[in-house]
Amino acid sequence: MNKKGIQGRTIWMRSALFLLWLSVLTGCGGTGQSQDAAARDAAGDLTVGGQETPGREDGLTVEFMDVGQGDSTLILCEGEAMLIDAGDESSGTTIQKEMQKLGVEDLRYFVCTHPDADHIGGADVIAYKFPVETLLMPELERDTKAYEQLEDSITARDIKVIHPEAGETYDLGGGSFTIVGPVEQYGQDDANDWSVCLRFTYGELGFLFCGDAEEKAEEDMLAAGVPLEADVYHVSHHGSSSSTTEAFLQAVGPSYGVISCGRDNDYGHPHREVTEALTARQVQIYRTDQLGNIFCYSDGKALNWKGECDAAADGKADAEAGFSADETAGEEASGQKYVLNTNTKKIHLPECESVAQMRVKNRREIYAALEDLLEEGYDPCGNCMG
Image (cartoon, rainbow, N blue to C red; front, side, top):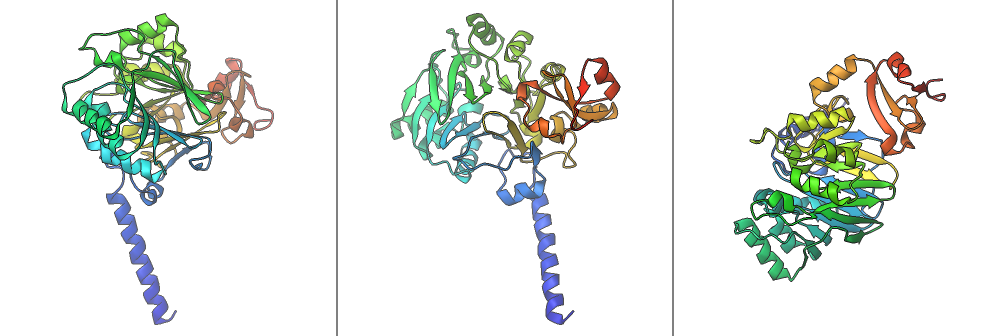
């Protein structure tokens, strides 16, 4: 090799080492802020389902943003955008940049579920920086800095504000959402129960968002008979045990549960009672404190997941089931991984073509011994296990 070739190779190697070092420094360190696309690729993204990332005009993209101990979810549906909450005061600019990265120029709807600072702290930035057609929020005022700043942005941008009522339906692209709560009036000190709760549907799939609604609000929604069934449940109140009662969880019947919470937060969210209740129902759990920004893509029939900061890059633990590493290790030790169709009672290998066509509500991923599944009444798939 000549001298120039050696020099060029040396420069290339130094550049590669520098980029590797930079990716470690800018990796998922718990700041709650989004990485750029290059850093995401270097982090080893979680991918479940193998679907390529669609453009904004294609299908549905739901991004559960990592805003620390707060909430913010972006929904892009066939070219239209909707934001639910905007984290705390430090999150506004982070959310703004993430939305701009995804090509969002305006919001059809901006939902501020309730006036707690960890949900509307960054809302003033979003309401000021992006044209907002309609802002939905409960009829509950607060004498706080976060609420006053949001009011200032609403006034400055002349944004239409609606206090939605249960039963109202709004269109978004090819999808729509129905307000399911609050269904009652609550006291001034019960801000969580005032949370605007909504059920978003696209094709055959449903997503449920309930802000910080607690047990009383959940009981009232159940008593009112509002539609709650959903494939994806954005777990209320960051996974607090004050929410997600057994009766409520049974009514929702989700296949996936997404928990927005901060790493090592002071509240201990998510609480063990909630994660155990979800696990007992075979709900796959994805957490922003473990995976960073969490993306869900759909064509209205299937769901595909991608985590920005896969805490288990080897494809285990959170990458497969959203559980903690020790829980998944215990499941792996119990047997082979299979995908069950709870409707047809068939056992499939994960790579089986039938898995991609399976309805979400009928799909169950499990580590188990084959003989145990046979005893439960399941039969092996004739294609992948024949």
